[in-house]
Image (cartoon, rainbow, N blue to C red):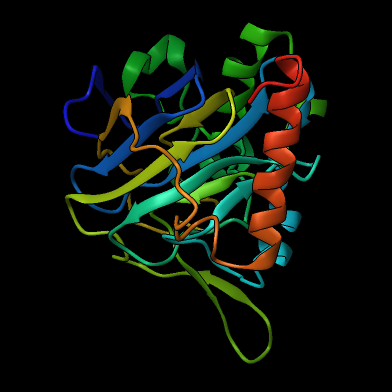
Length: 243
């Protein structure tokens, strides 16, 4: 992406959504360090098709996501590829925070009293955006948590790695299908910081370089090549056999 055609900063607790065209690039920047961006993806032409975290991990034989990985739908197609990443690890197993967690950790606050300084949670942030498209709680899936790393100890307990994402860390997605993107800048559910995070995240939109046969995301593993073949078949069927 040379020059973004759109840029905005998402405050702590903020949420955002947009339908992005195939070939679009989304670049996320953790401006102050320690951010967590929750992401969900849907097929805007068939909202029953959405991001599938288990398939994304098992297809690529991985517990974490980074550059070269793809993000799968529950129909075996690829919504997006991770084409740039400063961190090497992003969480896709812990899901979203919810209101009771946030209140227990940092105290109960509401928008009517604190306005934009209130402490939003990931689940309600997602639901606010999903309602714009006629979707609700039943349509939520396990999300991708960008800028967050989790590790497991010998007993299998999972914990969040503190200070994983320094200020300025970036991740870029190239969209392989038209995709409804839903995201928030709310705390990771395992965040145990002394105070509610307040850092902003920058969103930039532009156009990615075209997919090639030598693309490292396409060739990361045989499953990814099949995923891109599924994309090609889907696109051909939508456009009367032309792709």
